[in-house]
Length: 202
Image (cartoon, rainbow, N blue to C red; front, top):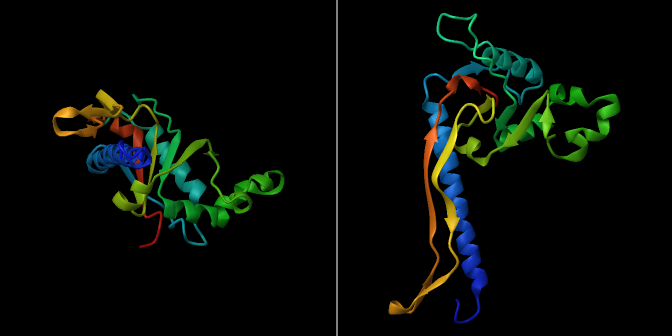
């Protein structure tokens, strides 16, 4: 590729490798949250893809659960968590855009910001940052994740994701690039997160 000046293929493959690294660690973090026994779980009242769904009510209830979290048997010593992020899958994104309950927040003066008009979800809904993750559809179908971002945990990089420039290996007449990431997953405040279950019908 280098000899024939066809480095676009190299750049494409390097980007694919980087994306694979990112997806792998994202998946591992979601799985850690799914399997941690201290992460809250709450079923929604009605699946969000149903006509009588109560999306804002479900989010408010889930928010209260996280805000009231404290040491076992010590409700008065709450941790003070304040959830600020909602992570959903792509199917749930479609359900929200087509939900009557969700759209009620965009009546009258906000109609030009309505997802039904723009075709995209707002960056902020009922005080929450909304993030759409492809991995949610694969690893946690029918769920949504509410959490306080930068509190529940994260991925600590001992060696951050790094891609070296192409360099020549003359001994075997080849060129290579090294992609490295050495990380650890940390969940130090699992009660700052809550899984909403049943958000979509099977």
